[in-house]
Length: 116
Image 1: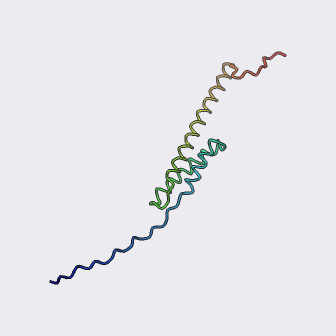
Image 2: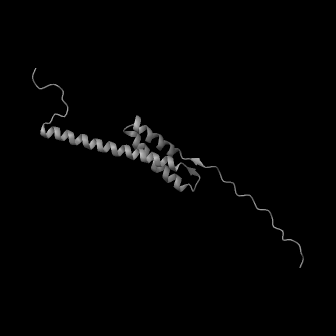
Image 3: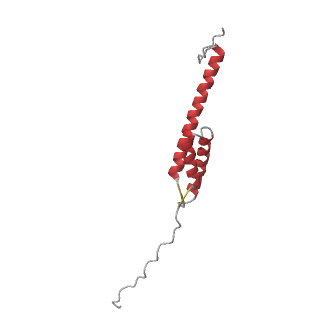
């Protein structure tokens, strides 16, 4: 046996990982979720929910190459909240309309009583 030290070759550099990208669907979801509260009341929440679910699927299937999960989540939260509030408001308006029709309740006083 010889007393030569064991030669260990240098480590290879880690493989190159491409930079991650932010999902454009997540960005669209977040923007439409925010705009749903300020201007796009009807269509904004629908776009936010649809693109948010698409973005979540793309991010899950990309194995770390696509980011933006937080933006997609917030777009979904804002979109669903707007849809729930809008549906509740629509149901309340429908109930008030039916009550005013059936019972003849004047919900808004117009000042006109039928006489001149």
